[in-house]
Length: 147
Image 1 (spheres, rainbow, N blue to C red):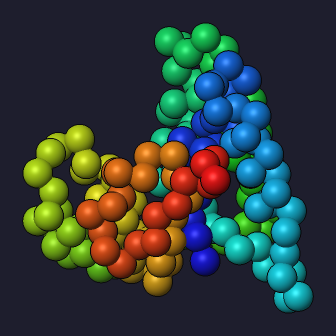
Image 2 (image 1 turned 60 degrees about the vertical axis):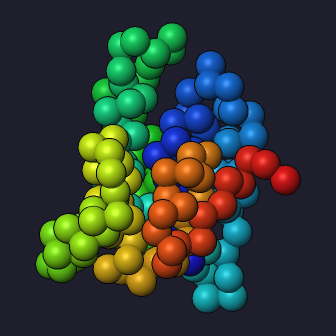
């Protein structure tokens, strides 16, 4: 299973984003394909939704969503039945261990996300920012917007 990163959701829901069209197409595709048991092949970490709400409502964006509209976007995802990944009780230990390979404070939130994925047995992430996750050797990191 692959997790979706925040940037894909932001691009898919920000009409002025440089990757809006391909991100929207990708998100629509992965959110509509289910296996024989009716499960999606992707999950969304709770942290991604928090980051999405923060970014997509930021007034410095050319077309931010209102908080209510952004909240509804998140609710729409929840209504699909997509698996939501939450931090486990081991998160802080995993986070601190993974943080040893990080040299920049700019990677703290990516490291927190990676620790949530690791603790939940999620081995892949779809993201536009591939380099943000390359240091985590347990993760298969893919940018779905490039061939």
